[in-house]
Length: 259
Image 1 (cartoon, rainbow, N blue to C red):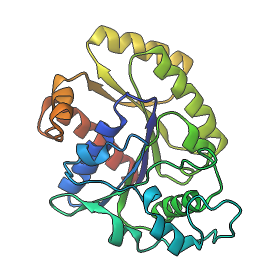
Image 2: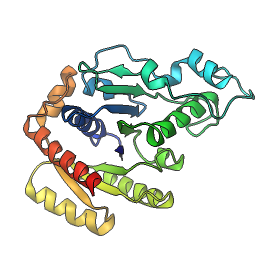
Image 3: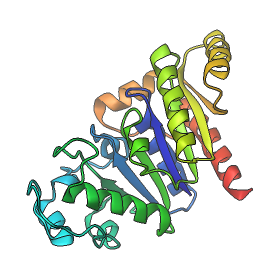
Image 4: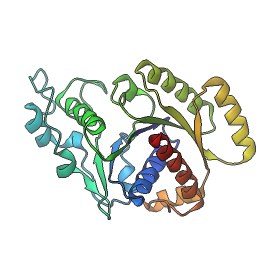
C-alpha cells in the first residue's frame, strides 16, 4: 500500500504516520516511511535517535545524480536522475530494521515548487517509491495542501486527511478535497484526532459531514500520553488506549486494500 497522510499543521499527522508504520511493521510488513514535512519529526516518533541529514541537504548526492550543484542557477541537469538505490543507501532504520525512514527536507531555492536539482531528485524519488517499490510506503506530508499542487501524491492508494475539532482544520480539509479531486485521487478519507468527548465528536462530525463530506474512517481520542511521549522523544505505546484506536484505523486500511 502507498499511503499519504496530510492535513493542517499540528493536527497529529506525524503521530498517526508513525503509529501506522509501526503497526505495519508489527504485522510483518516492510515499510518505507517518508518524512516530507519541513519540521522533520518522524524520526523521533519512530524511535530513531540519530542526527538526521535530510536528502535536500546532501549536496554531493544531488550533484552526482542530477549533474548540477545545489544553488547553481541556470544549470543544465538531468530531469530523470537515478533514485532506485537511495532507500538502501540513505535511509535510516528502526531498531528492528523493517522500517526504512527517508527524510526529504525543504527546498529553499526558488520557492517550494521550484525546478532545481534538489526538487527534481526528491520528486523523482517520491514517484519511484509510489510506483516501483513493493514495500508499504507511508508519507508524512507537509502541513497544508502545497504537495497536492505539485501532484507528488497523485498515485497513492489512499490519502488520509487528519483533522482536529477546529474551524481551521476543517477549512484545510475542504481545500485538500478540492485539490485531491483535481488530480483524481479516488480514495480520500478523514481521521478525526484529539477528540475529547462524545459531544465534541458528534458536533464536529455533523459540521464536517455538512461542509466537507470526506468519509471519516477513524476517531482518535485526545491523549496526554501522546504529549508526554513527544516531550521525552519516545514513540507512543501501541498497546496504549490511543494506540489501540490507531490499530482500528490500521485494520480498516488493510481491509480496504483486500477488497
